[in-house]
Length: 114
Length: 113
Image 1 (cartoon, rainbow over the protein chains, first blue to last red):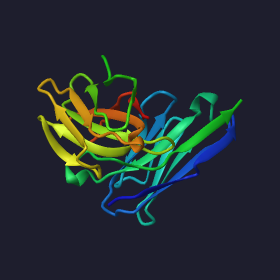
Image 2 (image 1 turned 180 degrees about the vertical axis):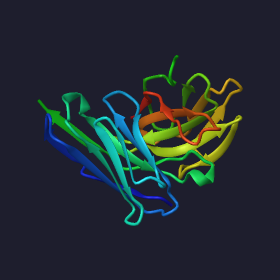
Image 3 (image 1 turned 45 degrees about the vertical axis):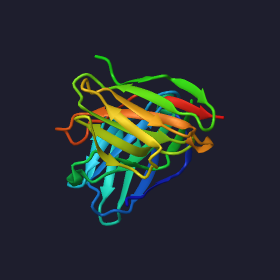
């Protein structure tokens, strides 16, 4: 089955710096890669996603890149703000199965210091 | 528009007991998935329900069972609780016609003592 590895487990940056979180997946059939932000006491919230027919996607300060050959995908946050502090999860799935099952990474705790 | 509602928010159970967790999906959604999130880990897929049937199941024992009602709400039941069942249980709803559009609830924190 699919396995998703995520690094780093913790990331501390200064406000205004950029943050990069990296994930690798094992199943070449995976074709959908969402990123979730989880704040304390809340459920995961989708912040951006990418499908395997696209190499990069941007949404304001957030971008995701995908390298299908290497089975890598990354989340980039620019101009970080204290409110970006949270746990971020990457996930992968195969949309062709018709099932909506996500396999998550182990999470990255991002701390943005003022 | 209410999102996904889960109840209770917290509960404490004793080993060997049984527990039922409840989920009301986002308005308009017809599919409910359940995930287990152990402390410091990513969510793990338990199972998914659509049209009151279990569509797919993750690597969880039969002690974990579920149900979906005609109004699309769902229950997760866990029997013979183990200490290792302590976790945050997340419900996510979506539309079967849209491959992905998961909306997660805030979860139920289960502690087994």
